[in-house]
Image 1 (cartoon, one colour):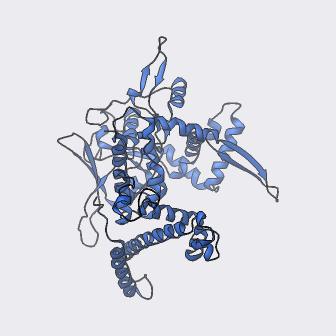
Image 2 (image 1 turned 90 degrees about the vertical axis):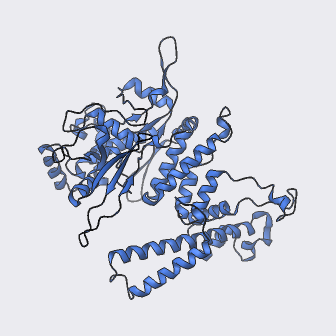
Image 3 (image 1 turned 45 degrees about the vertical axis):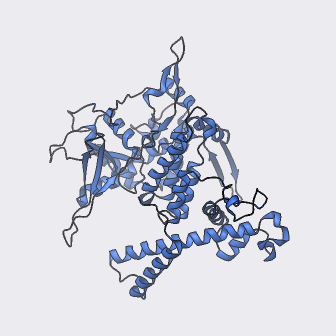
Length: 497
């Protein structure tokens, strides 16, 4: 990706001109535009908005600086009769406080540190400029992406806050610059994924990258969130009882698994035979909303917990949480052969990190499914004879890909089916790990019904596999578009080199 900073003013001028031309051609509204013209208009309007965001961010940060508290009544906001710079920006822009705060933070990031006249030189001189701290490569890369219009302000904020700062002080034995380089690689990966990920998911992936690169911090952050766990109830004025949970990481994952199991039939039948059709018909006859099903599930679990009868709530598919852990993170630490975890685990669904203590407790309480990986980073085959992927193969594919591989789809692995890239019957495809990819039901049906296909290539140098999504021919012209490289959503992609 070319992240060379472009002139925001020129970008704004060019994009605004394109929007004006397209809007004039679409007058009085956009209903007469073709699909491609409509999407082009939206893309140009988005480019204009990104450029305007830079102007708003820079101006907001400067308003905040000129309204600093230590300026008192001489500050810009006070002179305009407003208490703070944030309030003044809100008054002018009509933005919410959170949006203004993000704009100010982005503007401060782009402006860099302001060198005071009392810091050993006069501001603006060469001597003062040399005292400004150097900006790390990973942060320069992120700032260049914002200035160049490759990410929006919201995407910039998601990556910046999700990753945080490299915790150099926690790893004094590492070579200088090692963590900064790891952060730069993570930023580059996240910037490449930004165009196809919602902002919320991009923030989640940035946190996963941080946890992958900072295993010690995983335990610290887990303990902070664990300390904030709570449940409270209250009754409103009409007599309706309300409740509010704040979950710790492990309990939150368990509740997600419960609700995934309860809602599973509503996603439609899997490729598992006639029983699924019967389940789907029953789900269609259910008039409850998803929220009501979730409520009934939680209440059913509470009511049946004492009698330990999970089938009453879930039927024959029991919920569970699967944790992915590197084999090298398990060691024999003591004379009694006590198992000790030296790394962190990741939830198979979503990839969030769990500290070693939680993983040790779960290994004592549950079994493990070993998955072997080759030197080139591919999970090895564990079976070839069956039509459907085996349980171990599904675990291996899930660990490799982390969720539905379709671009811009954030479905977790628990919602995925396993697609043969070469159809088992029609193309005599093999049920090998290398030839299977996870797709959620919607994406799986889209692929088969619309004529999309996935192919695999192998790098002759590294031996690594690449999976490509090929669109179907255009129905009007017969032309076939360029394939898209599918990227893994597994935490394993944030490896420390």
